[in-house]
Image (cartoon, rainbow, N blue to C red):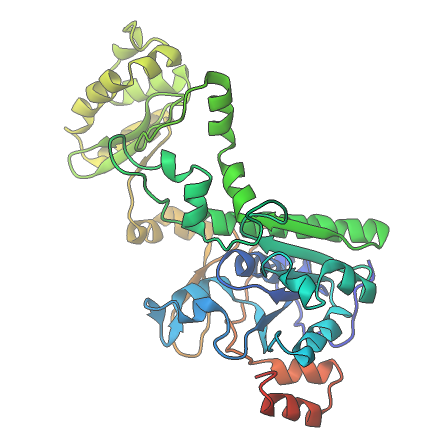
Length: 412
């Protein structure tokens, strides 16, 4: 792949992570969660990410506050580090021309416009690849690029409902529950980033650009893979089971004297370790619990027997007992307890982000390392239109033209 060197505004890499996509330019026409998370992943790996935003309010998540850190939305801060902001009105011919000019010198373009919207503006994959044959073009949508719902909007909880995730979340007898983390949005961002990386490898091999598509719908269906397989095999609809899992037992949360502990005995050997740790050595000899298959059938009785014991012990004591035996377990942490744990500190995933209106802000780094390293330096999420002049100047726009476009409201 011939990386373009003209008008690139990049810094020297500070870690192996930043070297992965050094020299790659990404145009980011996304907002909310899925698309920005995708492009943040690329930015964390060293790509130059140009966030193209509306001139008025920018990305919707700029207004998602409270909560905030200083004057900024904490949600926006979580999804938009290592980017530059160019504010442009895509409903004007001049604004579209700016994106086309930047696309000629880009390696990747990512958008989350409704299917057909980019094409109607002259920003579809075929139109842009006529200008730049090696362009990797990624479209992120709610329901996918085909089908009767292709043009419908969608958000994470809506897709949790549509794909059945909400139907299996919660406790039996309670109403369906939303998974609180944005697993569909962030999962879609991950899949999109993975597709883009694959497409960049293809460009390197063939010199030809590729169109990547990802959707919230496909991500939600993907997360249901095991439950779909179980339903196909049994004909029985999966149900809400609280913290338990249908295929194995014990594999759920147990109450302690001062909290709760999740115990995960995924096989007979681990079940025996759990029983030794909790002084319940006779349980594996009970015919109701002698194998996983019968434990699953007798789950409720097993749960009550184990919980009789755990209720007499503190959560930390239970965890120590189980860990000494090598039995998988975890105390039930809240967010504060998780962040303060020695293990989270040891893996180094929480990283400082220097922002102008707030000291001590931390963000979650990429959940993997390269040669044991994470990125060691992050650029703060940009102010709306912070880099408009510099980017257009680098793209060859005369200062007088930039002034005129600002005066006309085409850019900010």
